[in-house]
Length: 138
Image (cartoon, rainbow, N blue to C red):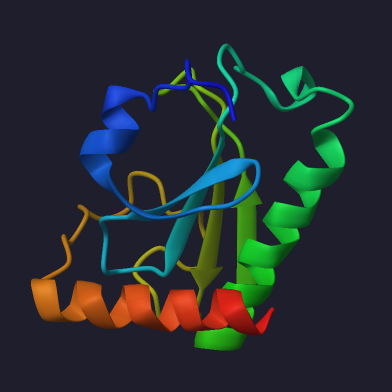
């Protein structure tokens, strides 16, 4: 990866880094309400999905599928939401969120429905271990 990759300060403040894949930094949103991963391609200057280079696009879509499969395997959600909004954070990042009929936002999008509930340390450790185990199985 390039040495000039810098994670946007808001992502750094709101998330926990749990892995670096060949293309993306894998983040866990610090909201225990939802199993919620964020993938950030480690390339400078990317703002929108179409900015991903032709050579990186197969890796990006593959990593999106890996994150989706890991969340499916670890949590058995009813639905996976995959979105790249970027209205608040201009750096390209993609959300992969496991959704359940009983979650506070169901069936609507998660944004603006309920305040984030930061992980307590034991729950964070358990969630990270579950995700890392799922990554290895995929």
